[in-house]
Picture (cartoon, rainbow over the protein chains, first blue to last red):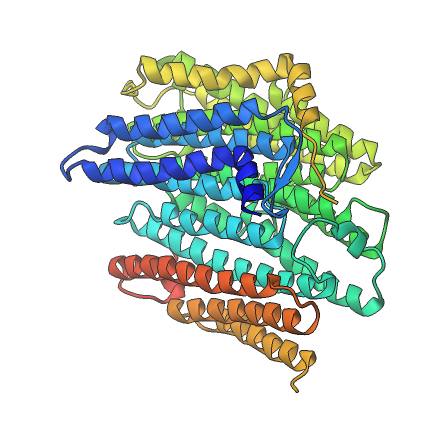
Length: 492
Length: 101
């Protein structure tokens, strides 16, 4: 028994590394005196980057390994979860770098950001490979509880503490509702394991179905809250706006990808079998929610003054787009989501990085601050332009290929109405993304004041993040092959 | 002997009470209490189902985890409420109005 557990530890190394990193970070942080400035804590950042780099190398190395369920089927390590984990690790590392140079995070709290971000990442990784309800619940709570702290990181700012409060209340409510739904699913199926769930959901009598239907809706509420889909999105714009900018960046990548991964896994494990009432109602729910999420996200993004809030709404609409891949319940859908996740990661990072530079230089992130950026910082403006084109899904950039994949998954299953809704939404999205481009290129700058701190290192980082946005649009076939390998392993 | 439906009824009442508290009360502390009620309803369900339907330990273990995680969540929630109180000098949810578009 014990030997079985030890034998599986090899597949669990990335998570263990991160736990060690987090504890190490706490110790390193404690060695610094109070007067030390946050951004000059070299050892702290070295520890964080080393831990994340080792995790990343380990994850990439295990991409080709055979899928396996470890620790009494509680976790499943398959190529899909590994890909999602890679996306989340890169996102975390980039956010830690952003937090180091952003003035939106207090100097004495920069160390805390790194520690808590790694903690959230651990929760996200648990969630991405959760294979029973207990791991799912622990993963969601690890992710959420630490996120509440991150949202209120700017602790003397009333907006930030309000964001944390709203996040904590909404999070607690939805976790409770999810758990209540879970308890009834457990009661009807008699197990918390996902393994073999397909058979248990096959032959049910009317009473059982009557119990399961609302239970699955409640279960969906908990996951839907994490990916901020309508109608559980009310917290998202407020929290995204109130939190410091690096935290917003972090929220729009790690919890969202983790939630998407678990939603896809739950859908595949519970409903990939023959047609039945439960499956049909689940797909119907997902379709309505996905269409609403996209539309509400895009329409609300139009009237915003703050670029950060606009990007928050745009990330809601991207979540809706990814959900369209989930409801296909097919391998093409899975592949499309993994590809979408990769491109979404880089596009979001570039957009938020540049917004962060502008906000630090001019005090706020309103649209007018981008006026005439191309005259002051051509490189930055061109990168922003590329990213905005890519986010709106114009060819030949990566955003287009990502959307195209989702469309092909939808057409493959004959969901034409959803495809049309998604297409119309892309047109709406074009409007507000191109608004920034228009301001940057055709308006005169408000002042000649240049942005400080856009030095060589930061130019290098932004370039490194923009290159994939372009390259994935041109050399997409290799990445698609890689995403195609990321199949979900359903334990029988 | 008390039967399974009675347990389910009690937990459903707890759940409803939690939802009502969260909707009706404007005090943040009361809302946190409502969340605890919902979590306890779920824990009670898990234990009851384990006792009457399947006799393995899964439900008991999940109930233990719920207790621990609920405590952690309440701790973080209260810390944030204290921060909010120090800044705004109120724990009324209607005073959280800075972030509305």
